[in-house]
Image (tube, rainbow, N blue to C red; front, top):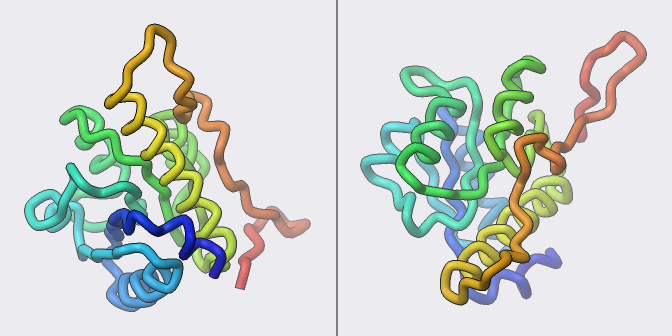
Length: 170
């Protein structure tokens, strides 16, 4: 894939999803792009065994038991872990999509996801991560870093069929 050149610094992409098959396939796909990837079965596992401070991009399921993805997003923000988040979900409603993007999610994707769409979302998240990191190392009076706004301009809105259902990519 075209991302492997971009992955030269080998940033960490963490995946949090309660579905084991999704975790395994997503880890394989992310590694095929040239990134390090670690998977976690729950938000709690990510917080206790993961690396929030070194995660450059978080691929996060919305619907999970105990702590859902939106709650994890809020917790990370509250604890000053500003990780670019790409939500991946099979079962989310418009209200959840809006909440996630208003809270700064880089993208909101619906399963199943094509490799190209996921690759683009990860690249966008990593661009934001590296720009923010560079800005924190070399602060200026006025930041040129483009961060997701409250309006969530980087949402991937899947195409819809005439009856209003989401079209799948695979």
